[in-house]
Image 1: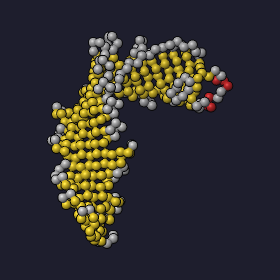
Image 2: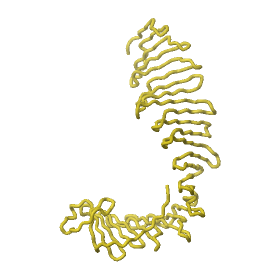
Image 3: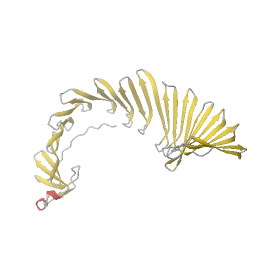
Amino acid sequence: MKYTIFILFLFSVSLSAQDYFYSNSLAMEMERISDIQNISKDDIEWLLEKIIEGEKVKTVLFNYGVEYQSSIRTPLSYSEYSEGVLVQEIKYFVDGRISNIISYNSNGTVHRNEIYEYSEDNKLLGIKTVDGSGETEESMEYRFREDGSLRTVFKYGDDKITHMENWNSFNNSLFMEQSIKGSLRDQRYFNEDGLIEKVQRYNGEDFIYEEVYTYYDNGIIQTITRSDYHRGTVIVESMNIQGQMIKEDAFKKDLLLYSSTYFYTGSELTGKEKRSSNLLEKWVYYNNDDERTGEDYYRQGLLEHKKRITDSETNSYTMELYNKGSVFMRLTYEDDVKIREEFLNEGKVTRTRELGEV
């Protein structure tokens, strides 16, 4: 987010006291209408009327003949109306600097007033926002370096800092921002390209969480490392050049908790594997609808049994049992009820036992 001080420049325009233009919903002057007397205003979707009275310029935007919005500009103010009701007013100093931005309620009372404060050399020092009763809602404070570049921005609420930004001097880019809510403090760091590099979270003075980002040359995230220091866990997410997650590894105290691998065909997820790294390992497979299609279980590195889901709605599946890595039995289930047993030797069925259909 960059902060810009808007300055009003007034130009002398050679227009008659009253002019009409074809326009749009943004009240832009699209094309001047020279024969307004011969045209029905009700037939024009967006019609802009412009009236100049000395230094005051009034514009009225009509939508098929009905007033949609209007504004009045003078050298020291700009007022915007909706259906004849004042909704916002911007006030200026004589040199064009903004002094106030005031928004109004539908009954004409002040809803919010932004008050701009400047240094003696006209640098913006702060913006204070007060409500209709004059109570301060929030305020912004700007600090500059000796060379005039923006250094730090503070945002206050309830007389406490709720947000802070540090800016680089060499390219006027955001370097770090900090948000505070209660005892939690989030700090975000950015690289020269404006991409987030690191997020750190503190609870009071305790450093409890961190995210570290790396990128491909095209700006796509390559990895995100999420460290939860309270739980002692680290999760590493890896993306391909298209930004799709291809791997997720979770660790606790350097021990692998689980590892997930994702497979794609074009932009569609076509497969997913998940394994845990205890003595008993579990690999889980998914289809492109993220529905579970199978599971493999390993004990001490050897395949123990394999499950393949044939119908997830009826909970129908086959189960293969292994001994020292070789399959010796295949079980078939329908509606979670075993209906068949097959005995295998060297991968071939040697005997089948039917248990009846469900």
